[in-house]
Image (cartoon, rainbow, N blue to C red; front, side):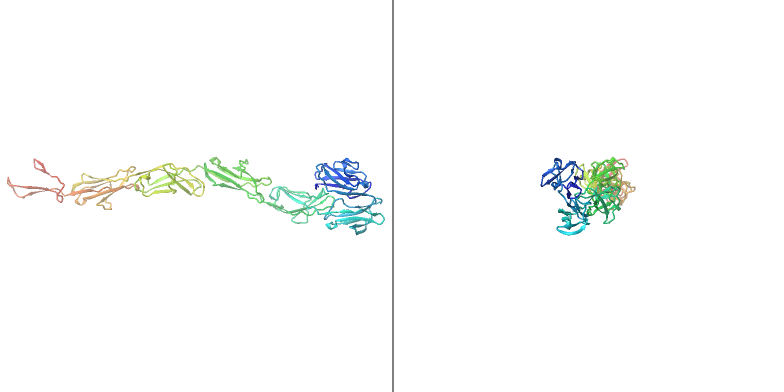
Length: 583
């Protein structure tokens, strides 16, 4: 059985007089003419209207010009593919008939029964009406049931005391149709969108309806169209909607539909997220993500715009620059529409992507690139980049990829020659994904700490009153200017800070062991202490004669030449007025 087609009988009753003219029409929603009226009678069996002499078919309508009692039978519509309508019982007789509907009546409808006589004028009789052999109404021209219910289902007939009684007709009561409300495109819409509410009612035998729309359970009808359209919906249009209907002839009425809720919300505004940061360096990977949060929409198509242009440059939720360039910098925004095309978001706020040249660190060696063994030297890696305040550092030596330190400053507290070499560094952001270039290499030179040499001019051995100079010489690569410190007899007290210290009139108290060291004038380098050198200061040479008296020729005499306080290490020269003798 196809519920989409109904057999419509005119006149609309199941009992007919002989010689009546009948019209039997197959009606569906598309007004198709693919239907044929068929019947089954006890006299003729199965017959088609289109291939018989009992009726004539035009389109989907079969007409019987003059009925006879042999036309009593079951009638229905059928297509070539075998689809069928519900069957209808038709009886043809003489005398009294009951005017009752062909199709089942619907709960809530009004049912009117009349008793007709073929030979009376007018044909309507004042008669008694029976249901299931029980008298329910007497001596009236019609019996009206204003609101049909399932309890009214049964066999009905009418009886006139003089004209006789009709055949019995079965009156079936079906549940009233319940409309279905459809909201297109969705129950969840955004302000400003177009939304349509449609009321669909399916009931056999009724093809044309009048519709009533209600909101929030009100009994006030605010629309009578099958489709109710809000061309630019507002939040005040949100609510619960229901509908019902009555056929255009007013005899049938549907139930009220279930309420359907229309939700109207403010159109969502997307949020643009830039990962990992809005500030990136050339060559890095950066992703723009468009997030739209809207009730009832789970799938979106995305549109990306740059610098306020209306041209769409990407339709992905995430757009990735795998190796970003400075030309990719700018202001980005996005919007979206759901994949079915019924919803559209606002445009997002613009978010700025800044692309700058990847920074190159600078290595600083403190106090100097040229240091001496044992000194303290610090390597410092400085990185300047907009938007990055905290870095993790990596130190490399001699171009190796192995990281030997991760501090911004790496200090050799007592540097050795093995620490000498070429150093470079780079950095990565501590809370992000930025990475700097590698710095230029900077060379650290480590030399042996120089040992000063002390020179005494003119000699280490001098006599009191002479002039003597102590000189401290320091030879060290990369240091041209020194501050000097002189020490005597191992004391830590500095008695002079000149490279040359001169005793202009030396005394015996100046004698002793002297040493020196030095530090460069910037204070970063310091030499070893020199070896001690001894300065000897003596009195003048004294000549004595023994005996000390007048001598005569031939007398013995002793001449003694000595340096007081020093008995060794001297060579003496003897002089006369004419002869020099060294012994």
